[in-house]
Image (cartoon, rainbow, N blue to C red; front, side, top):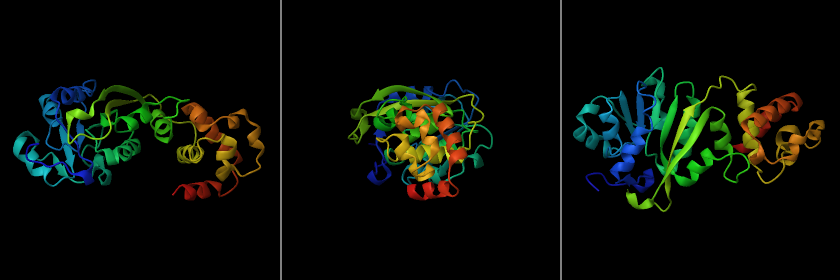
Length: 271
């Protein structure tokens, strides 16, 4: 397809359907004055529609073969193409204030991209794009569903998430083995969790580490085997049944009743 070869080790699958590319570009229209960072533009199928909107746009591309292609075919991007790994960059070096993130995300790093969005949540009012359907469903999943997990809770604490549409594998070159989906994350009004944010993450990871068990069992790395707090009815539940607010409640309970040094032990177990 064109001048750039899709590379398996970069998780590249180039979108051929221009109508879908346009639809993805349109997902940021509610933030018309916010600069955009596009992750992994490839040969610019999405980039061309973002440029049409006359937005402040910077693209980040790790593929050395794609960078000269973009320079040649999109002169409007002059000085706005960064060759590098988005996961290794500090996006506030590009836009110190607010910016949106968009992309046809490489399958092999899509979860990591959304974890990075969380790190910069105060700067990112909207993030949208295409990723594998399975990860998109996990991010948008509600409590009580099997797909609800760590990424669901952490992202939904700070963003309202919309699963927009599913994309068939046949519109890519080469076709991936799975379907894709387009989602949009819009920052909610939450300014504070009402609990220790670091411990919140640890509680979520610890509880989902044994997701089929009740919290009475899965929280033992943090709370020990015998803890009076287990009498609280929340410990009868499994982690996938808890809303963001219930995880906040659980985090505050854990902070009050956690043996000294248990948080560090819990973190070490996860790594």
